[in-house]
Image: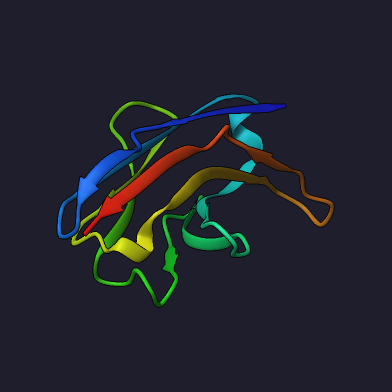
Length: 118
């Protein structure tokens, strides 16, 4: 089992920055990918950014060049650095960890609200 605690959300003006944190505990060695998803009101959940165990990253087109996913110096922590925030980035952000293998498991954090004001 993997437990995820995500944090760092808040209210920010458009153009501002926030850093989200995802702290993982439990069977960390089983994790293959850690990602950040978001769900805006009235919209489906979407993948924002992900980082694999080999360090490779991918981003949604809507955040490329503005968001960066990175591993922290603190073990088992992944950050989402969000710069140049836009009103449309407003959503609940969720950390996700996916285990290795064909029959993978998905684990989720509790979510953290990001609100970008115009």
